[in-house]
Figure 1: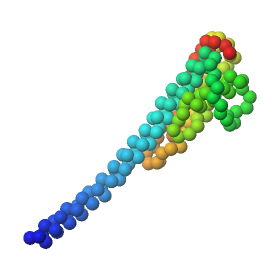
Figure 2 (figure 1 turned 60 degrees about the horizontal axis):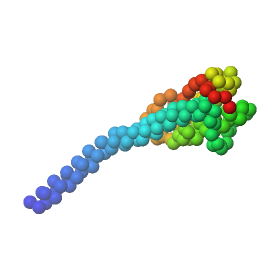
Figure 3 (figure 1 turned 180 degrees about the vertical axis):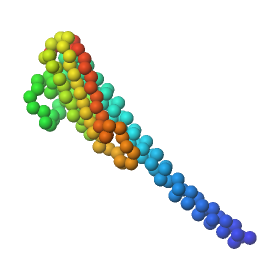
Figure 4 (figure 1 turned 135 degrees about the vertical axis):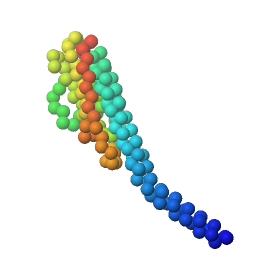
Length: 149
């Protein structure tokens, strides 16, 4: 009788291993999908909020003192460069540094438009699940300048 119980127990253990082997790929796909989309959504929200905060600082002429290295940026006003640094600091994405652009097409004068744009390619992820827009997040805010520098 004891031998029969041991055989049943071993058979049940084998069934559990087979069941886990069948369920594990779906479980891992679900977990890694949650992680990938979590990082993407976090960066998306951080991008929108950071661009909005930087635009708000720009329209009230509070450009901040954030120092950063702007690669690939030539020319531009001191205000625009300071605002780009502020935007990068405010965004604080998990998966890298965003590319930021600040445009004041009619100059830095009261009532004129100020546009702050940012773009980020999400570099973190397992690649198991497809992310929207080929992993590129974009944000753009346009506000009227309230106070000239």
